Length: 262
Image (cartoon, rainbow, N blue to C red; front, side, top):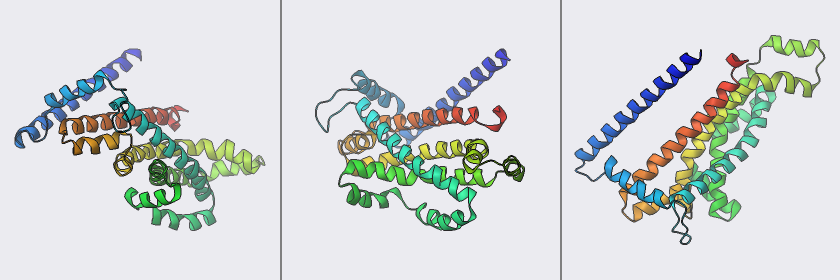
């Protein structure tokens, strides 16, 4: 079993290296086609190493290292994601367990879910009187829907046999929720959280472009204003890498709570 696990790990690593090779090759081809207007992997790597030489410097409000920018964005993302989850999970439990709750809340979900994050930003500014609060608000309001929908689906999918067991043993409402509803719905909830964190990480760039200040989105916009395309490419790679790590983390959590592991 251990040898099989090592073999699978090595196989995954080789596939990942091959995938990165394909990406680098396509990237270099695009650089050649555009006659160097889009920086290639070598030029981008050179700028990346320069940024990593001093990632956490702070020379004023609009001049901070890439490490400071990234940490600020991650804090905003998890703040908005956490607030959204606190709304989404209870609302999803209500929708999935109650036909009345589903009929009342589902139309609201379907109306608000497709709204662009940028459309929420002015309302966030009006409500919080600050760009920081508005950015967290749009992350919250746009990332909660996958968790809410998956939670509702998980609760609504509880088999009748499970419900009958609770009735047969005379479970109270609280005991039914903790012993039957939540254990069955947790894999679906985690799937929703995994999707939601991906949405939150995508939204942060647009939010910080609008709000300014500190963050990876502001770094992209500031680099564009300075005509530093290499820095933009570095930011894109960092955003993609962090997104991959977040997805891997929630994927591991999802596997730990999947039905197959029980």
